[in-house]
Structure formats: structure tokens, C-alpha cells
Figure (tube, helix red, strand yellow):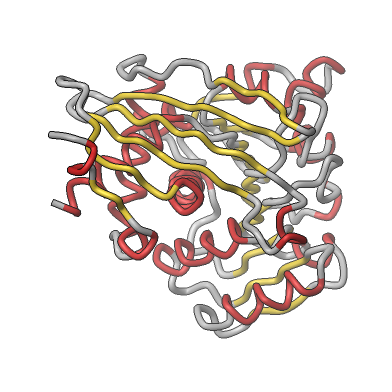
Length: 317
């Protein structure tokens, strides 16, 4: 088998994959990761011209090895280019033979959304009817497809973005999925009566004030990279009865959302738990002893890429 035999998995193939299967696959990957049953080296993170770059690799039992090179370039939209770029290579774990090359931005968006859905299935209020969205870019748009699949009874999406053009585009696309999609005047208006809040920004300061949140809400934070930056404000993490993360080590190292409040003594580390541990024990809000505000902070881990790469490659045969 040579280079010419490597499958090129296109974005068109990715969007056809059953989203529930993706969520289930990522949940299983989280469980394997938290049990120490995966190979998931720390990602290599570096900055080029002030922009975040990462190299992520992993393998799961019975599956191949994925290696992803990805970057986040916030200025790209002004150039007419995607914010996130990169590729994923998928290789046979036994022979080392390259099997597939996959579009990294869309795979990343899908695996990130699938991870968010794992958290919402475990920690969100039952039968959610309203979504609040801060940051209306590509990542949020993909999340809406997953929310529509998992929660068809959602009645309203309220969204805010600093870019009116980006927000308008989001509203048009999301309006094809939900009956009511509205532009919020400010972040507080977007989240004030939401059941689930999605934060997906490149902001270097907190995206919303925790005092704006309703008494019972699940907050999903997937944006911001850099140990000095944070998307979650101190009030949100202080109010949270439970904070789930994909990887405790990665979240405390790579972003400031939790490490900064921890250093200030505003929260204790025993409030933080890996989502894979919750999933393995099937501990939702009630059984985890959580109520009110719950949080999922994700920086993404490579086993998510492996799980979805395996699904995509299998489907392409």
C-alpha cells in the first residue's frame, strides 16, 4: 500500500456521518481516556506570529492512530480564510500504514460538538428548550446541527457576537434548524433564560458575566487558547456546583479559565472532574450531586480525533 492508496476523506463525507454515533464514539473515547486505556501524549502547543498551533496524536484500543496538525488564526476571516486550519492523518496501529487524510477543521468542529453533547446529556437540565450562544462562528454553527439532532424540542436560540456580519450569517443558517433564532443585544440578553449556554469565542477576557446566568443552566465553554486567557469569568466557576473537563491536566495547563480561579482560591480542585469519569459511572446531574449551574470546559483531546477518524475511515471503505 502506497501514498496513492491513502483515502482522502472530504468535508462532504464528514457531514453525512450519523451525529448520534459520533457523540457515542466520543463518549467512549472520553471513558477510555479517563480510565488510562488510551494512548494520548500531551499535545505540542506553540505560537507562530502570535497564533496558536497544536500537534495532537492518540490511539484507542482496537482503532488506529490519529495525528492532527491544527492552528487557530483569529485574523483569517478578514482574509477570507477559515479561523481553524489543518489536517488529520489516520494510520493503522498495527502496521503503521497510512490509511486516510481528513479535513481537520471540520473534523475538529464535529468532534468538539460531539464532546459538548456528551456533557449536555450528562449535565444539562432535562428537556432543554432554549439555547444561549456567545460567539457565532463556524464552531457554534456546527454545534447547532448537533443540538437539533439531540434536542428537537428546542424552541429558541438567542445568540450574540461582536461581529454583526458573523451573527447575521449564523442566524440565517441556524434559522433553517430552529423555528426561533434571535440576535441578542448583549451577552447577558443571550444567556439570561437559557437552559444551555455555549461559549465559542476567541476573546481573551471572559465572554459573559456569571451574574447573568439563570439559576439552573449548563454552560459549555470551548473557546480561547492560552494559559493567560479565559472565556469563563470567576463568578461562573464560583457558582458552578460541578465543573467537568475533558482533561484536567490539559485544561489547567492550556487555558486560564480554571487555573486562575484556583490560584486565587475561588474554587477548589475537588469541584473539577473529567467528563470521562462521569460518563463511565453514568453520573448525570442528580447522581453527581450537582444542581444549579454546571460547567463543561473543553480544550479538546486527541482521542476524540481518533474516535471520529475511525468512524469516518470505516464508513469510507
